[in-house]
Image (cartoon, rainbow, N blue to C red; front, side, top):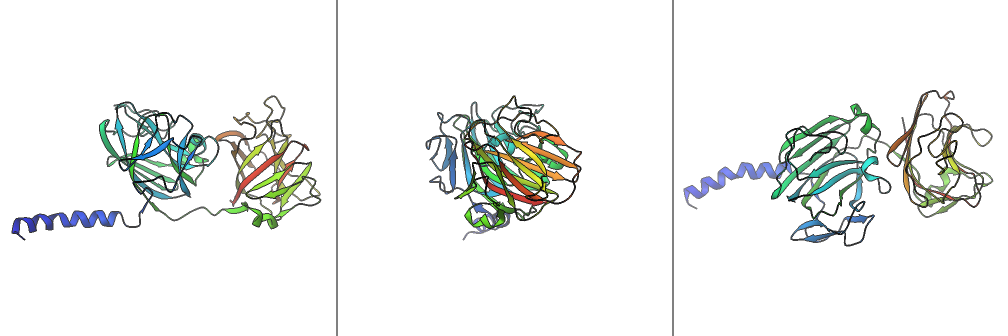
Length: 373
């Protein structure tokens, strides 16, 4: 080897070692050939496709179609590239739920073609549509851009093209504080042919400890059916109720966060009851009743406070979050905070109960998770 070639190779060695070291622990999320490991939601199977080593959004796919990862992530270092040429509009989802309003229950980094000197919550790189980036850093003339999302609760850092555009404590942003802290990665379709490649992730240690109350029939033993007036049935991943009664957990909980998906027939009537003293008593009820003009529609703390009616559709899965701490109660339905109440009087631990209240008006529940606070 000539001396000049040797020196050039030697000088490149530290950079190669640094790159290798930087990528330690990362797992590829895209094989460059197929959509293996990804699932198209809310759209046709042609909505995303692979071309020239990149994932491409089809121009006929439309919103709310999105592409989600195979598994869910809590804390992580997610890296990749996106291609911008001309007018482009899309987004990178993280902590996204499988069902419901992905943009508002999870989080999104906005991808947009426009350069702006004064960033806004709608700008390229924004935590859309809430938090403006520090700066807009996008190459938009047929060029690849790099991104990095480093989530280690409560700190969120985001880079585009090597520059920091966000460094936030999410607990200080009220609109983000109670959004999902674990969920899917994904890409939004707005029918612009944006491209993605070199997708990889390194998982970081979890900080949350969730218990599954129901993910399948194997969890049936965690529930007390009593005389089963609720007509509850464990149907695979779905807990189905169509009667007039309660099904309640055997464990008791005082302060907790509850997450689940709910689906029901039109104009059903049911509820989620907490701090329930048991089958002989009654705790607080979060009403499930999809009638906008009802005195206590979905999300209301029955008898105490009416909720702001959420955006829900019959026979469609949507997420519910219930956060109970001391005298405080927060209800989030489909990504919206619909109720806040701070005057709970019963501070004793109790069961969680699911109520069916109208025979012939079925309600279904799935992926029921609880975290003690």
